[in-house]
Image (cartoon, rainbow, N blue to C red):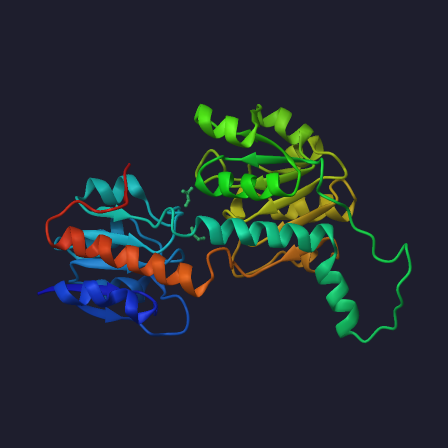
Length: 320
Ligand code: GLV
Ligand code: GLV
């Protein structure tokens, strides 16, 4: 029987189909494996179910052995995998698109509202037992109606965020190397803009691009300088898409008005400057963190591994 290693615990029900075709070993430590531990744990296995913190490259594949056939990442993003190097060594790679789209879009909107309506700040005030009373000028935020949402990367998640924004009365603009399908633009009434125009136009800028060499520090000091001082930055993609230090400085100096961040440049660390600011809403990488979604993600990863190990094409392959 084939052998499969899962690098962190996943909802057990998700593994049922995989247990039919392989011996499955789940690493149950309460932290990411170190690179050495990861190699040792997976050595000799035919398949591996990985998390976004597991670094998978050519050296990993060689250390694990030539029997390795598939790496199934339990994430839609796969910047932790050196796709050309792994593919070149004959190993299939899969991710989990689609199943986490709504959960991630929900979280992006929740965090956005947390900033615009000062929910975190208000909660901190109450929990600190500071006296307060209702008056018309108390803790005023800003509305979203009639504002422009600028989306970087109008893929599945970007579109799901845009749909929610439309329900809030927002206008949609987007940038990205690929233009969205005409039906998508029509449904969302979405304008395609250059990156520069998008930065200048957006009242809310929400990032939904993959992390790669084109998007690393896409939002740096220069990009932030082009934005409106009233603008809010939302990031539920990957931390390094933003230069976190530059963002903290821009927020502190009032060059942008707020940020809603689910991901960080050096996760799990958070730039200390950000933690001191009230105009920042933060969450510990919770985009896909619902019971339903995490189960669906693990199940899709397990089905991808089972497919490859039984000689079928993977359901959601990542290609170089
Ligand atoms: C989570 O961050 C993912 O890429 O699925
Ligand atoms: C993510 O699920 C996507 O389809 O972009």
